[in-house]
Length: 173
Image (cartoon, rainbow, N blue to C red; front, side, top):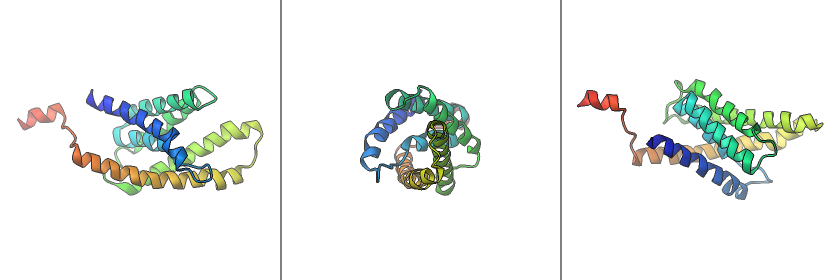
């Protein structure tokens, strides 16, 4: 129950930071995508179900408060959480390079899907411009933010140690 409450707090806090702080630190109207970081992290750190649920609620919050089409971002972030869950066995909580790669690829996927479904279908065929001036800078900015989030998460894990499973506690006793 404690993990679920912390998960809800992380999702709400990341959404608030995305729509306030990330817009404030944007360069040329391009900011980091904290929501991609959180959805991907829930997937590759905690597995399929938490990744899908966190991605869905992150996207739903974004749809309700910032989106034009209800459900578009919910589905997109849900897929990001789902696809990153396949790497759960490969990613350790203290291993930064693979997490950076997964977040970078997730943000690239996010940018391409947003372009294809929100711009290309409306007749805007400037994929090269969009990739060079919007997608790639956002990916770089998001990966830089992931480094900061990684170290904050490591610090929090050192301060608040994770509880062992109840079955493990019984075996120890």
